[in-house]
Length: 113
Length: 116
Image (cartoon, rainbow over all chains, first blue to last red; front, side, top):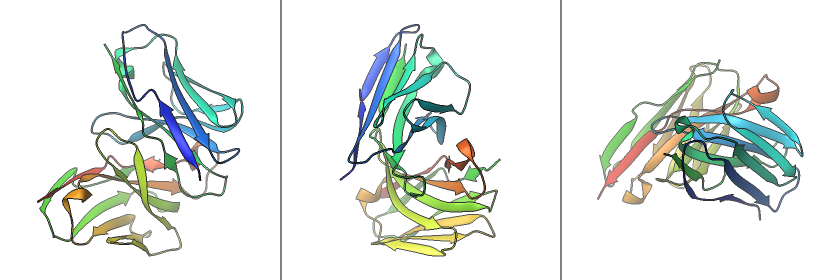
């Protein structure tokens, strides 16, 4: 069966520090991978998506970047965090281009102080 | 640009009551619509997915309907239980698009509390 893992689950970082959130998927190959951010009381905002290794599409200009070094690994990074980067970050995957259901990880709560 | 709205933002009902959650979208050219459940501090769990050609989908006590022409979907929960307390989000996937526009547009959710 397919599973998706995100870590860390919770992170508290000072302004200006770097960030690395990791997402891995098991039980599938060549998934479409997504990073979303959820701010309090708001819907999910798509940040990045990837259809294959090394292929990253960015949805909004921001202080963050994403990388896909392996087929089932998706990393969200920042060189210098801002206060506005605080939020709940969710990784998701879709199995094939024609697959319908989007499956989410448990999320990573980032607090920037 | 597709916009998805969920009203009300919060809803509180007594246990055992049947309830309806609403989702509206501005662009009716959708591929499908998906309902999710999110518990506090957790990821999203997919509940039901309705293809654009379908009118409704059922899973247990949940029934989701889709009226594409009017840009509306409802999630009906029968005989609500305290364990149903969570935030419910709907998301639409566009039909004609490429690249990033094929991805989901989410509503901001309805926070449901079922009182024992």
